[in-house]
Length: 272
Image 1 (tube, rainbow, N blue to C red):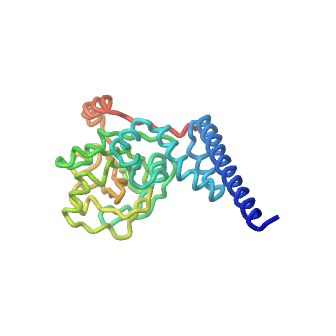
Image 2 (image 1 turned 30 degrees about the horizontal axis):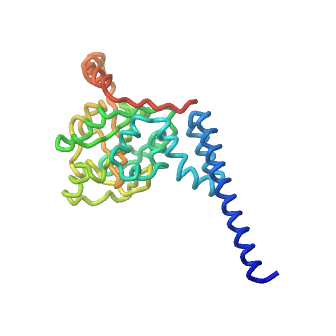
Image 3 (image 1 turned 90 degrees about the vertical axis):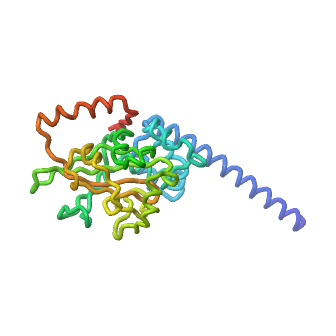
């Protein structure tokens, strides 16, 4: 057998192997999507699958996290993706999935003293709202799209107020008026603080003086009792002291509750 014939044969075998490998990869993707679809895209199972090996981690990063986000928060994701280049969102889909289901906890900062750190934890359910998001925007930035979660309440033994931890995400952050304000102010990124979802650098909205009074009213805290950060990819995370409301104050919140009923609400559960 000639050398050139052997080379051609090896080349053809390599092509067949590569083709077979591609078909197998596609077949595995279809199977995995069907499996997770039957499990209603359970986030814990997806986390475990992505940690098995490098190939599954790459597949989750490329496809599965996105599919999970779209399945679990369809209206919110559709709104965030509207006008996004190539259907991509800031910080990648793995970060978006983490933001949907993970309370990032709280660490003391220069503008928000807690005395100690409080660890993050998995959330059984979360509610994100555009109405709440508008309360976190200065008047000149109200055309920005921002979803913010209800605060996750943490009891603090030595305080009468509870610690609230909240998170959110901007749609089209690179084109937002909020980012333009931060750039115009020439504000430095915050030292020692990173986004808990994508690891990006963050701006302190307290330092930027871009926290409106409506944010404190929405959260149910005093005006100086909160702080939040926005990262370069448009993820928001923050903490506040939640003041216990009296019955009279509860009645005064009826207007906010009525407004929420008209809002495009996104209740996201863990299927547990």
